[in-house]
Length: 302
Image (tube, rainbow, N blue to C red; front, side):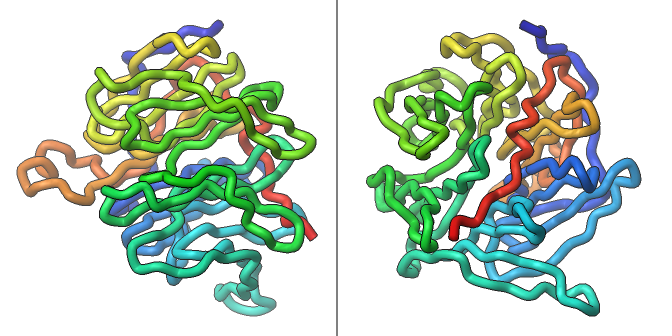
């Protein structure tokens, strides 16, 4: 197992500052990182090596993924929406793939794509106090099948290298759970606790899985990413120069670059002064590398 270089340099990428940055996702064929600003409803596409970012304003967005056959699938508000380029200009044509009944106190939050391209999306209670959210799987016919109910803040999703395990965080529970997973059917079962974070600073937000099968968890309010072995044992703590890291994803030509999104929402003026990189997209080469399956394109079922 490759060890983490906890003292590796962490640098900002580009010049975009988000209010609530989230959902980094590497697109290898474009040397591009998709990420979003939930508060501003911005979809960002940051290209490498230039670090130039193209930003699109949407009605709502909390996650985004490249799609088999072209386009970008966005998750936001109460809908999953396919964006694809118009024939002329920079505007997008849109098509709603699936949606749930809209409620003022609920919205989609984090989402994920399994190694087979199957889409998962979770919702959250906007006041963050009641377990009214759900975790959904996108099934044929544009059906969003409820897999979990009584979720408060549905967050990180990830899969083991062989696809047999699915990791999941409902942030207020202060732990990461694991399911037995059938990649052929998308069935998730036998939920159990994987990593207890009740004594750690912050709460678990987004997560990713590396080539060693270790799980990286962004700790909102904890100024760190935490890495756990496949057995759920603490392995390393990577400090970051922001108090609210939100998620992380491996990318780059060798999947050795780790990109970290962050937020500045809710911070005081003094906290912002002490954290000039709050809200920025960050980059580090921590040692371990990512999984090719974590860059899978979303497959829209017929």
